[in-house]
Image (cartoon, rainbow, N blue to C red; front, side, top):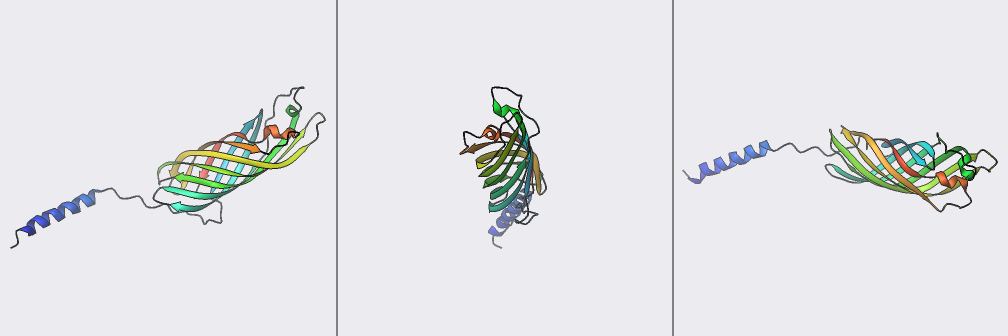
Length: 200
């Protein structure tokens, strides 16, 4: 009998036992939602110059890179917002006589998601596009309705419940090309906080 045969058998059994002891590799993430349906939502608010503007944002995501837990996606996001709290009035600041304010956005950009089922979920995104805002003032100042550009960044941190991630988000949005004669410009964008849900 070949003396090498028992050695090879023992070696093979050892490899098999080591392989069986390795933890199972988590399955690759697969979206439960087709790309043409929304895959994320954000509920939060922005704060600027004493005005608090609650907002809702709905997001479509088209993944262009995906491995076991990391993903990069193209984003299309629409948002609606109306002010719920207004600045303290100051006779030296006409914009402080804000009576109502809205801010709606349509943005495109890119985002990163790090996720595994039943594990931490985190990510970030950068988007930009037009912002449509309008303000009405008490005290005689004319209404101000304008369109300009805005850039926004957000960070997500939460937990992945199966195919759905949820948690808290913070961010900042900054408008550009604002007109100096616009009184509503003081309230566009600003620090942002809220909750997110992602089922990409």
